[in-house]
Structures are given as C-alpha cells and as structure tokens.
Length: 233
Image 1 (cartoon, helix red, strand yellow):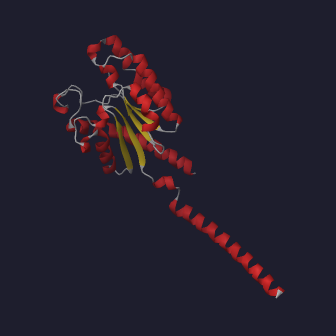
Image 2 (cartoon, helix red, strand yellow):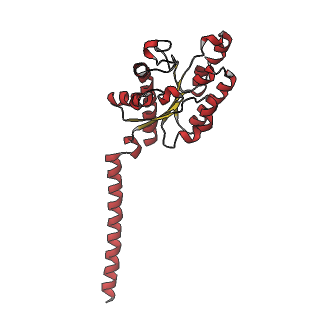
Image 3 (cartoon, rainbow, N blue to C red):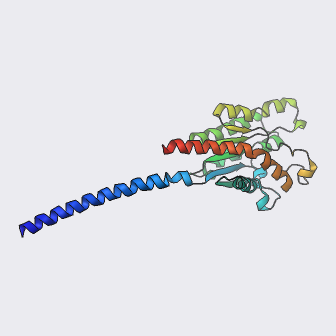
C-alpha cells in the first residue's frame, strides 16, 4: 500500500513538471509566432480640432478625419482616425477637454486649433499658452503629436500676425513634434474649394487638405511604428 502511495506521488510530481514545461513551450512559441499584441493593432489617431476637423457643413464621409482614414488605408496603413472636432472650439475649449477627449490607447493626435482664436481676435499669448498646455499634456502621456498650423487673417494687421503665426512652429520645435505649417494650405480664399461662408472647405477642399497632409501623417505613423518596435524588444 505504501508503495502505491509513493508511486502515485511521484507520478503526480512528474505530470506537474511536464505540464509546466509544456506551458513554457506554448508561451514561447506563441510569442515567436504572434509577437507582441500591440504590433498588430491599428494605429489610433485622434483628429482634435474645431469645425475644420469636425466637418461643418459636410456629409459625414467627407469630413477630414474620415477622408484621411480612407486615404491612409488606400496606401496600405492599418489606422483608425477618430473625429474629435468641435465646431466653434477655441484653444481654451480644447485645453478644457483634451484629457477626456483623447482616450487612453491613442497613439497620436493631429492638433488643429487656433482658427477661432484668430477670427475672434483673441490674445495670441493666451492661444500660445493654451496650445502649449495641450501639447505638453499629450506628450507627457506618450502621445505623438502632429501640429496643424494656422495663420491669422491679414485684416487683423501685421502686428497680430507676427505674434500669432509663429505659435505653431515654435511649439513644434519645443516639443519635437511634427508640423504641417498651414492646415488650409492650397484652399484658403479659393471660392471653388470652400463653402459659401468662404471659411469652411467643401468636399473638394477637404480632398486637397488630405492629399497634402498625408505625407506628414505617414511620418507620424512611422514614428509610432518605430516606438512600438522599440517597446517590443
């Protein structure tokens, strides 16, 4: 009887050892075959801005985030572009909502704010401080940022423009972010590419914005992929 107990105990110990070895082998093989879970995840980009991002006056598929996502997927990128645009938003409004409007798991933000500050003639120093706070918070969270610059309306005068226009390149330099110098490049003041208000792009205008900004967004994606590769090592 004692012999049977001893044999059973040894058998159980042997089975436990085999099970442990098998578990380790399965884990190692899964890691080699599948790699890190994040490697296969799509790049998650939040388009964070005002009506120019939100798609004011446009059908949903024609809004900037949706058109950008479609263009990037057509070029072979696995991406999700989330529309976090709010019509009428200022840099102060963006600062107030950035922490909850950019969810955890976001890889990058395209920051498009400042147009309404300029249209309302708000103090450029305050706009700078607000945008600085937004970029600072995002980079502290490890979120890559692409700053989409704006230009002051020239009817506000040269002194205002000299204070407002440099905000965007200055912050890009400070935080080592990517910069698209002027979000409305190629369509501003062109009546054929804007809606009746002369401010918001129509569908054709959005298509041009997307076409011009895509190469910079691809640089943004490359930064994210490089970061993921480093983390996976």
